Amino acid sequence: MSLAHAILTALLEKPSSGLELTRRFDMSIGYFWSATHQQIYRELGKLEGAGFIRALPQDVPTRGQKREYEVLPAGREELIAWVAKAEDPKPLRDAFALRLRAAAMVGTGELLGEVERHLGLHRVQLATYQEIEKRDFPAGADGREERIQLLVLRAGIEMERFWVTWLEGAMVELRELDGQG
Amino acid sequence: MSLAHAILTALLEKPSSGLELTRRFDMSIGYFWSATHQQIYRELGKLEGAGFIRALPQDVPTRGQKREYEVLPAGREELIAWVAKAEDPKPLRDAFALRLRAAAMVGTGELLGEVERHLGLHRVQLATYQEIEKRDFPAGADGREERIQLLVLRAGIEMERFWVTWLEGAMVELRELDGQG
DNA sequence: AGTGCCATGTAAGTAGTTACATGATTAC
DNA sequence: GTAATCATGTAACTACTTACATGGCACT
Image 1 (cartoon, each protein chain N blue to C red):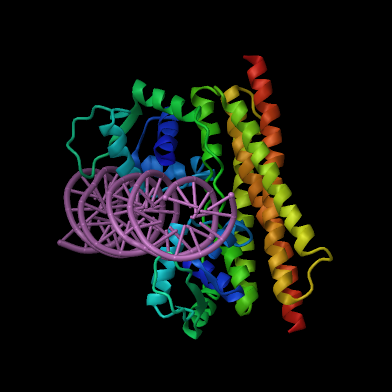
Image 2: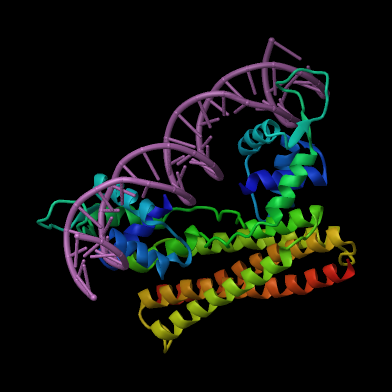
């Protein structure tokens, strides 16, 4: 049920419509949780049904019209309860590492190109996070809320740095293997 | 469709029964892809239906009896095609980072204890991977297959190292925040 | 009137999780 | 004979993905 709680957090930070949430998930919220607009609209419906959020009053009917949501006290309570809950880290899933392992069995084929492509993507993501850090925390973080947000952002940065470093190593290794024939 | 291809890879490495696969997923295959026995049995059924694998001939009927599978040529072809396929890295999902962000809005509560718990779990995982490296690659890796496997294992190790380092930092940061009140 | 974008949704399919059921074999 | 473990499965549910539908508004 992480998506529901990600949305509650985002709405506490700032009341938003579905599409605005979608955009924020593509940006800052999404360092560690992504979601499509379809998922978000569905979840907003559920959260409203559960009494955790409500649409801000607006005259116009429904379709094609913006609907802004805010968190209700029950929603805040739910989020507090969720934060306190213990949950084991999930083993991660990365299809690319799987591909490499498969390649060990059936041949590397075009995999080197794919390594280079991923390396490029991760470098871009790393640069994006670093931009955000420079823009939003030019002098470090001050308040309690900001310090935690910076902590999470730094996790994203270090994660991307890990991928870049590892992929660089993988490139060298695969080049050698290809060279050997 | 990554699970199917993870299974094909595992079966190429060594023909196995469903339960054996489950165990291997808990170990080496599972650095980057985990699966329960329910998922695996379901997928084995599909793969057999598709003609990618077959059960090794065995006299006894079905339930409660071990069934070993091996990869058929069509399965190998399918795996080769999959390895060559380009696929963007998926943005990662980590509920704990989400929790931290939520805590920035509604208060940290018992979160410090949870950081310590996760830190412990990741340290154990890191030690496990390092054990595997020492046991399976005492003198580095030699053959092409082994070098790739070691490369993937090292990714697991570096990933855990990242979590340990980051969680240590998070602990310090949260202690300070708690201290301030 | 047509194009493009903002905005909210529906529907169908795939993948993963959780809980439970059942038979076979071994050890006591 | 009964408990533990090995082994294979079913069923129901939840979450995520992909493709498509529809309406409103601004610009030309």
